[in-house]
Image (cartoon, rainbow over all chains, first blue to last red):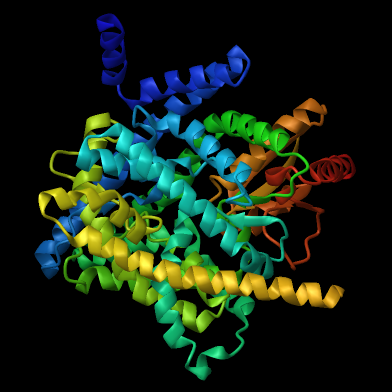
Length: 456
Length: 93
């Protein structure tokens, strides 16, 4: 037993870029991949980790001097670097128990389907990392791995129930039948919904917009290289640097934002044989039963309103980060905030004026929770060696998916240390969620009755 | 080798899932083409030298190349039909 323990400890000490690939090679063989394909997937995953670590070092190296100079020239202190979701997923995958989340997700989903508690089959195995992240947060507070998996199970159940109840509205909005969204970003609708109820009373917002024409005009600002360049230049200008330094930072920032997705893709490539094997298994298991398939959000990405809300949120987030009390993140890699725009889209059914107001109201939640998570994300990055940070450098994400839920449910155990804030946050979220859930359920039921009446 | 484009929000997760799966299916069917996953925000730039576009979103825009339903590869429903349409597009492209 001691020898096994020693071997495991030795493997972990090698860092995420070595031990996670070893795990995926075993996992690959377990789902009957060919040996050479499994090894190829393992090495690809090592490349993904190392590439990501390199890129995050490059990004923090470029941005933090500007943030420091900004502090001197303007007095605004934003020391936390924003690594976006790609950084969080890298750190999540480097948790030694990460891969156990696959079987947990499948087992919980199967049990829920068999008990007829859900009609959704979650085919989005990529976002398993969102469950892993919550679990890792729980471990950071409680030191208990079993408890982490219990909380992750609660999240999986909430995701399925939320996907069930959204399926009607999502079909109406996307025009694609038989699919729904199982991503936890949708949870943020619980916070936006009460505000939307107020906004709905203002008739001026119910105008139709030509979102497509507007998106054609401003869409270029959301392209990674263009947005990165603009952000880098803004940071340089605020730091009162010379034109040469400003332009250099602009190009460096553009490089970072352009390369993030390129490298993240390797994670996906390495993991796809496993996720394919799982979905094939599930498809066979439930053949003949009509299930709704739960997907990641991009099938909604045809909506111009979402992109306009994303673009709108960029300057709002940047401005708010400078003036919001309690914020310490300098928004950068997470500034394309899909996790804000998609719930706003679903809550308002694509009403652009209300979406823009809701996005503005929602930004502080993301900044505060990103700030609150920074010390622990930084610790974890250093502990697993998934990300290489300079001493004292803090990292986080300015667009954590479902921030209020994630914060509430993962930090709720901090109550034993006398911290009641997460409990209050969780209760507030649950209240909003219940209201929103009821509206969605009512809407789906009415639509069913109308359809039945038309048939009769 | 002919190029096929699939796009999603970040060009990372959903699009890469479809790309990996379709690449495997094309290989099994001995079709000489490669699927590339790109960012939805800059998809038009990538379509210029592609023979088909696998869309994950519902699109009303007209494209000069065949548009394949990408959701089929995620859900498994009508996957065979869409794969055949894609293979035809490659052979005619």
